Image (tube, rainbow, N blue to C red):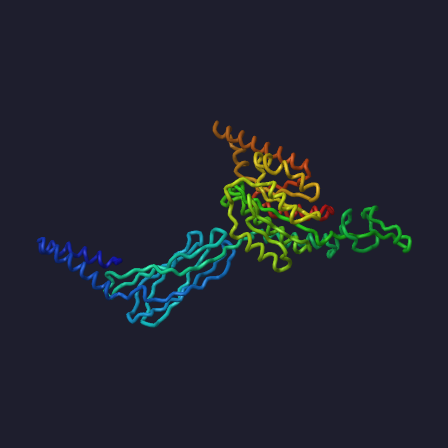
Length: 430
């Protein structure tokens, strides 16, 4: 039996009664009055279980975007229901103003909306709906919690979409749909045009020139229908927080941008999320189906506090693609993890595929290296500098084995990786 502030105020008035009639009987009578009033008010209050509640919630929403959960409440009883409804969600669902006032006559219904602004990816679940009714005197009432399940899938934010138009413009230039034409080994022949000053003499088509009265050159366009195979490392190194989010989130952003760009380029995209076992896979989706499939598959992915099984990861890549492909590994450039895990097996990939390692760098390292205010800051700066040198050394060793290393801050990783993809495509290395 929940009581309201009115019951407290009524009990406080008993002090006045005791001052006017100072006797123990006055206290007993006043306490009986308060308790009796609360019991009577509770009995007269509408039952919170005599309601029917149905929930309507969108299937999905992108991280940080607003949506709403709608509850349709119907009073099945005869008494007028006055009270408060609380629509409980997981804290990371970002439920704003989830308490709603109700006033329903018998048989009437009411809709209430709870605004949700999620702060984490994944499936956000609704908890119980609690209804607290009040009696006609407003002293006390009844309360019940009713299960009204609901699930909202929070998709990755894809904040890097702002970089997509500029990269698509560069892709159109590479593809020959703009005025710029790309020439070089490993690209597909596109057309012939008249020679202009500045053209590479190696692109001159001497046979066509002999048949015409002017010098002509060949133009080329990047090869299409290539394979882009992405591996998202979900092991313990992806759980480290860089800024306000796990390292994994920056990898997801970069993977989605690369998938969008590669799809527009006509390449086939496949992705697996792996640590010691397969966590998610996107394969066979293309065109307008690719991006929803990517977002839905990556939304519930969370880091696992285990070491990555790189031999198994390499085996999964080799099992799924035998032809040459661009293999992008989203993992941490952590010297110990790379040296003991990736480095011994990466040659199995580089002898067939073009391999790129995309890693997130920590901005706190740069801040620590700049600290000189105290002796403790100097030691921190020395440790940060040593860590940076170890990362550079392991990157050199990877490069010697044929791996392109792309390391950038969380907000810069996605555009940097997209630029690397375009550069490899322009050079005919895919």
